[in-house]
Image (cartoon, rainbow, N blue to C red; front, side, top):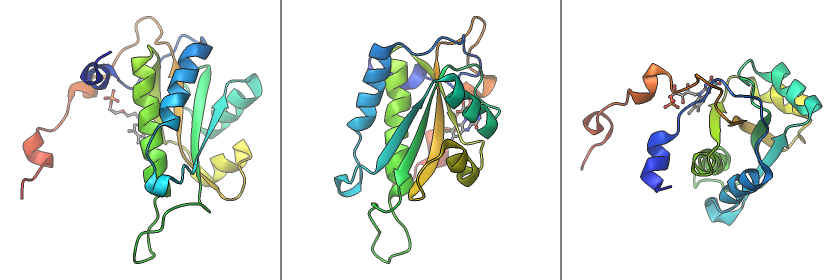
Length: 170
Ligand SMILES: Cc1cc2nc3c(=O)[nH]c(=O)nc-3n(C[C@H](O)[C@H](O)[C@H](O)COP(=O)(O)O)c2cc1C
């Protein structure tokens, strides 16, 4: 798929048909995450593939937003291995994990897999429920699968501000 078709056609899918993602597609999605850039190439992302009944039950304990997806990715980052901005107040953990998560999300569409980015959870509680090590911070969950019949974009999918409202030329 052309990149701009991928960007245009991706939408937040809120009803999956319950089929797990095919291995070939899942591997392509994970590879796109692997190729994502990170600050100083630290590659501190940590990705968990949640698809066993037990893992999916944990997802359901974390968020009400699984929507029937049988494959969910959890994207975390190793907070002990991040780039610290000059000034010492900020680091690249959320930034790097967000780039990885965006690669995963767009690669899913390109591979023919629907998705929904989730942040409706308490990150610390969720990290505990997933059993993440202390140094790993959970950024997001990504529902993956195939849209159920009748599913489709919500009306707000096409509602985007014009460039004049968000872009300033200086
Ligand atoms: C950072 C982020 C967090 C989101 N969290 C949730 C969520 O927890 N639950 C949910 O149903 N949708 C969630 N969404 C989906 C958004 O509601 C959706 O992307 C947005 O309304 C625009 O719709 P579209 O993705 O179809 O264009 C999230 C999206 C983003 C980018």
